[in-house]
Image 1 (cartoon, rainbow over the protein chains, first blue to last red):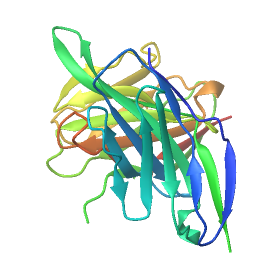
Image 2: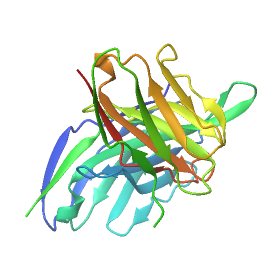
Image 3: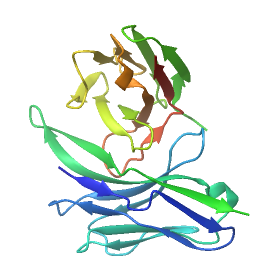
Length: 121
Length: 115
């Protein structure tokens, strides 16, 4: 079974500064996807960034970028120029193709426990 | 912008009662997911539908939980009877089809409190 570990339950950063959230995972698969999701207080979860394991280039989305180290099974999220609206719970998630039932398949997301990020003014 | 709708947003019930949650996915999304998120943890998949068929319900406690998506559109998750340990946020998500290339869009969730 896949596991996702986020070792930082809480972090804080000053507005406009840079912060890095850590994530490690355990799998024997070679092809999979990794994600960072953001869950703001009392609002729905949204996708921040996605990385395909076979792509060596780290994904970037505006102020968000990842450091994907496949051999180390590490997938950290860097947020640059932090904004107050970045305050949220951040979840790292892993997805692989799984075989189930009568030869069917699904793609199951496995989440870490999350890191609560607070951006201070 | 299309969103996943869920109702109710909050539900308080007593132990041994029945509860039901409703989800309306984004129009055209074939895959629908129900997750349970216990306070302080990440979501855990309970059941996944592809159209009206269950693809994965391996983590669904089938003695008390049931889920259906009769017409392949909206879905209902039911708990009967509710237990104290069922207190959690129940999230619904949908995607065009299953797979890492297809983003899962989440609804606002239903927060269940069992007394």
